[in-house]
Length: 129
Image 1: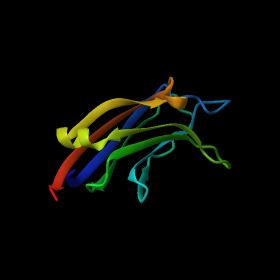
Image 2: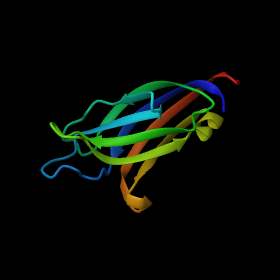
Image 3: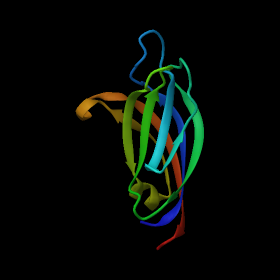
Image 4: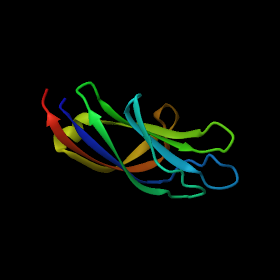
């Protein structure tokens, strides 16, 4: 895999599993390619279909294999609820140089869906070493 710069845009989400009992989720997304560098969108409170349009930049290395996407519901005074998680293979993004698609947040044991997240990515190679 090539070394480069990856730009990830968290566009929006739809059909998120509702974690709040009284209103809509207070949703936010955490995106990362390794445990050392994580970025988080703003928390959008009580929104049925959150739209973030936030872009984050990562330096990638040959050891990076996936972009990880975790969607949470913020709960004031408590630990946030994980709505769902997914990962996107970086090889596909690197080969094409871009990615623009809706990705599913799989349900428990891969059955069903916890919602969908629209992700855009661009990759710029900085080295082949």
